[in-house]
Length: 601
Ligand SMILES: [Zn+2]
Ligand SMILES: [Zn+2]
Ligand SMILES: [Zn+2]
Image (cartoon, rainbow, N blue to C red; front, top):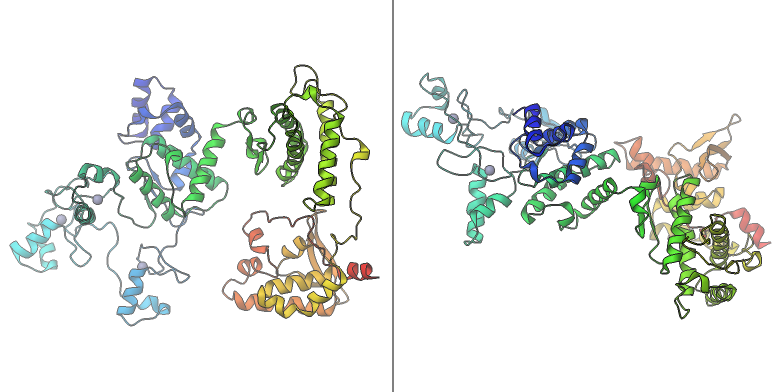
């Protein structure tokens, strides 16, 4: 059936809009029972992109994906041996079959071109011209019936048999009865393809009471490189999987098609109707979780999301999640949400979620303190200055008991002062609003915010004694960590740059000025000043040169990308993969020898 005909057929009975029926026809051209697809499934189907589907090798008739090896995010390595269509393993990109043939011919991996030609390619079809049936094996390249005719009836050699004019092609045997399988039956009398004949025999031996119909519906397809069979899964689930995969690709996430295949096989075995019902194995978990995240995002909007207590910030144009669950008073949680809704559009940058969440966490600390009231702080009108003082005393106690730092205590007070000022400015304390009746006394004053720690206090710079110890024990540091860690620490000490700057440093970070003096080229991310040049000593230049040589020796085959990824420092590989690297905590020591010297004075 053509896609247009399928669309017309779908449009007729259910009275679907032509566009929606067309969306389903792109996905299910065969007789799939698409009437069961609900409105949400139809909406998702409409979001599937034609280019993605054809790029991933989706076959709407066979209900399977034939992922081409060259696909950027789903692709796989083809075996390097000419004419071989298997998956190449390892850095040599040679399949197991070819490795065995190499060994059988006493050849090494660098003598691939000497390997005898395989002489066959897929499809594994009977050699009799026009016969559609599957051959027995590469060495017996005839279907079961023709093999019988050659060996038992005519008793002639293969070439003579193929040349005879009375040897005629046979009609196809029909498809294998295993739902997921797309192979042909082995002979006209059996129900299955050759591989499934064996699998059924094995399965029945293991469990004689096995229901054959059930087994047919749940058995996996015979694997081959690039093939992912979605046959036998409900159409709604197929749409979910394709949509999840499309969104992963759009987010530049690689998905191993072999892993996807095991997920589809397990879903068929568990007979689930949606991804949400599926119980994934350990290695499948992260892909399944990302599928679910994309599905949720597709059905949610910023409007529906703000009623939840945990937000997916992607719906608001930022990354990460935001949670309000620690705020137990309804009015305070609603107020905090309103404040965040006002705040999010005003902020820019990669870490907006984390920054705003810190404010919400400060509100959660206030919520914790209000819970000690007899009414648990549920009534905003009942709160006053005494509750603020209670809260401040509680923070002071937590600080003195060493549970929170002075910096955090100051930050919580500053955050809350700002948040409550905004809340009043937004009119949220007026009648009918979330914080209606909250008295003006319930506020933090300027004097309530403790003084921040002065720069140069022990929390900022490492004391000179520790720097001295570090310098003395660099060999031990290398022994318990790694050579890259040691190089990074030495660079930190020598240059006084921020840890995140040293971690993100590039392979070719060493340059020379006009007068030949060495300079370190680095990016100051905090101030967004890229390509900064810092004069360094010859000793530091030697350190970098030695590290470059080590890196080059470690990755000889990949002089650029791999080497850069593993360049000089510790966090670099995460950045090289395009993911933001974690910002070192605020209290991360600034290893600055000069600062330490000043502190020691
Ligand atoms: Zn091969
Ligand atoms: Zn044949
Ligand atoms: Zn089969």
